[in-house]
Every structure is written in C-alpha cells, then in structure tokens.
Length: 175
Image 1 (cartoon, rainbow, N blue to C red):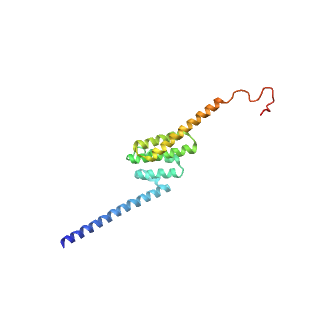
Image 2: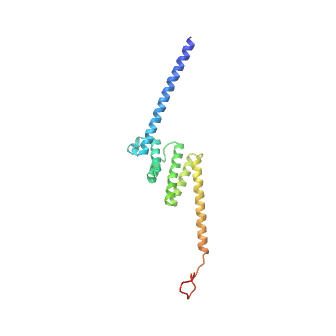
C-alpha cells in the first residue's frame, strides 16, 4: 500500500511539474508573439534598448519585408557584434539579403559587394549555413557572368570598323 501511495505522489508531482513547465513555455511563446506583432507594426522602436536581441532582429526583418532596406540594414548593423555564432550567422545572412535586394533593385554593384561580404561573414560565424553558401555561390556566378559580358562588349567595340560611315562625296543617303 505504501508503495502505491509513493508512486501516486510521484506521478502527481510529475504532472504538476509538467504543468508548470508547459505554463512557462506558453508564457514565453505568448511574449514572443507579442514582440513579433509589435515589431511588425512598428511599435517596437520606442523601447529598443531594453528588448532581447531576437526582438531587435525581428524588427529589422520586418523593416526589410516592407521595403525599408536602409532602415533594415542599419538595424542589422547595430546588432552585428552581439549574440552567439548562430545568431550572428543569421544576422549576416539577412543583412546580405538586404544588400542583395538593394543591388538588384538599383543595379548598383556596391550593394552586391556588400551582400557578398555579409554572406562570407555568415559563413565565418557558421560554416554550415547552407542558405548563405547558396547565395554566395549565386553572387559569384553573377559577378563572373557580368565580367564575361563586359569582356564581350569590349571585344565587340574593338572589332567594330573604324572610318567613315558614308562614302565621301555623297550626301549621306547611303544605307
């Protein structure tokens, strides 16, 4: 009888501990949800100094998502040296995506170079970051193709015939 009672008490204690753990996890998820809503709506800007890194990261993500690339890049750069390797890898990857988006939108090579640097930083923090590897490989391929295209343009320009467009003595009506 005493053995059954002891088992019942241990089971009741386990159930109580599980309930407390689930309650704590539920609170953590609720807080994360509220932070994400605040980041998405822009309400997070007022108290950024007191927020966890993940909330600040989320704010930068939402700025990028809504096309505010300069503000997003600024937020990511403010967090650049904070957090563990996994956090920094994700941060540099997202910063690279911001720069890549700006580079594609504006067709400015300087943003592409910044994106490449950010992806390299992401891989330095986490060499196994597959998305950063893929994007870096794409940038290298784009740069290589652009260099080939530029080389062909130079060749074509050098090969074009020099001289008069029309035969001398004619009025310019030659085809």
